[in-house]
Image (cartoon, rainbow, N blue to C red):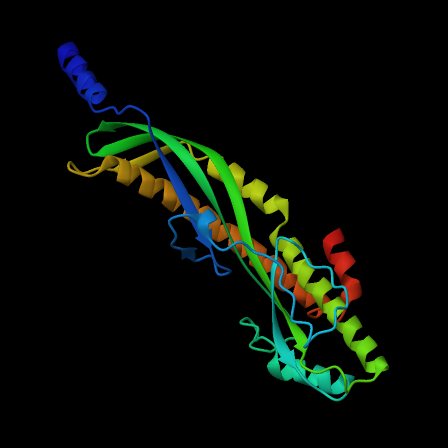
Length: 257
């Protein structure tokens, strides 16, 4: 019996692997769906955009360097007509199927490397995993209205419009603030780093490195989906409390909580 145990131990040692490493990139949309990409950091860099001078008078909006901006046209002879134009031409909210004056779209994800080693016992592979160098990235864009023609508007209407756009941008930037809240990144990083051991069904002939990498990606994919759902829920709650920016005074109370 002692000889049999010794022999089995030798087999397990023979099926143990030296440490291997791999790099993983995962990028998620607002629904938590994985976006397939070979390189998370090869995506287009977000840069602020400004409408051309002949369609928009600079009202000194405070753009963020880590956000990209796009614009849709509105027209009107006075401020009420401009608001009607935003209601007609503004982006459609996918949650309540209504159009609003502005919209913040976002994607987020990470890259990480991991080292792994394994042993095989009967039909199972036991992998020891060490995940390192977790790096996060968010791609955020804000859609705003832009006047096609300002010369026909009175100064009073222009002041009202500029104030409206400024408050709208502040509301959308609050959504950006939610997406970039470091509490989500810290929580995800802790959960990813906590992945240490995996027990996987094994069939002779399996590519073991591929098997382990797929299992690690599956675990972090679940973490990513949960992360996106939390961020999405906070954004929806913010819109509910502030009535999509119509009650801007509620913003401070939301972030205070």
